[in-house]
Length: 237
Image (tube, rainbow, N blue to C red):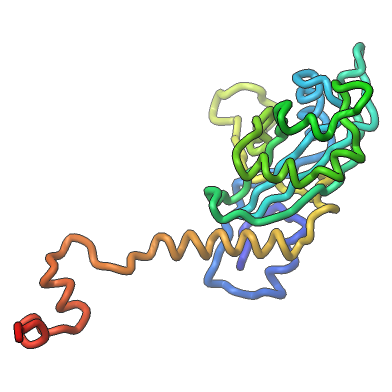
């Protein structure tokens, strides 16, 4: 797979190892997701859910990575502004029954029927990190059955040109492919696995777009296209 992008990510070096110019990833719609930007998202997430821990779900093609983000440092009047965090990979898996996506990155939450397994016994409002790790497959099952909510989408980023903060003269650009090298997530992801998942996405999309049967022709023409003689091959006995 060949990647076209002025930006780089942590898996890009593999395009020189698995050289295949028949698949091209036009990634010019990319943006670098920084830790500061992740902290902004986490701040909104904490305000919404009042939780120290956040769940982050990454999908590339039909591959999934579920992360636990632990907000380790806060700031602000009410301590609701995230300033630091650590990341743990809870689970990674593939699910081909789900709709494949180029890339999807979201902060998600789970309902009580799921989180009751991972909360503190003394305080049901608090998560227990050891229980989260022990019951991570419960969370995977919830994702696979769409039993979760998207709290914050991290698939969109606005870039303002020349310091402008308005739409005048098309100075605002929307980007939709997050690059993870500076986000804190990359250290938990095998570069080869995510690279091959991108490659698989384009391969499956290419296969799906190729028609294996002629469209708009009669049954007789279909028979002839398969090399049969309609007079000689289908005579009654």
